[in-house]
Length: 135
Image (spheres, rainbow, N blue to C red):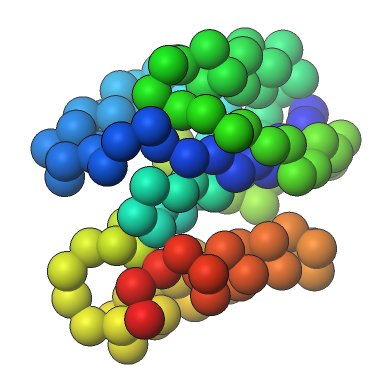
């Protein structure tokens, strides 16, 4: 199995309905492919982890790379893994740009990050949260 962590930028701000639709499609496709992960959005920026069987993760990531709604896709990490960090989620998500208090957003993100044991991966998410999530 492998894990890919990447960051990207949307070409334009997505409406909440568009993000809901993207998540629904991603969750359905990921479930069928055996891919799990976590997505945190902050404004037009996305940080995502994909994990699962090598070929499935590669296929999902290639589809993301070819999606014209994204640009500046940067792979932060591509690692062989023995077990999943986000095995229960087709795609966990936190919209850091959603309305609501910064405290609630911080608590949600802290809960989502709780299973992350890898310090480098945890630092990616914590750094992203500090830079791109509503304060």
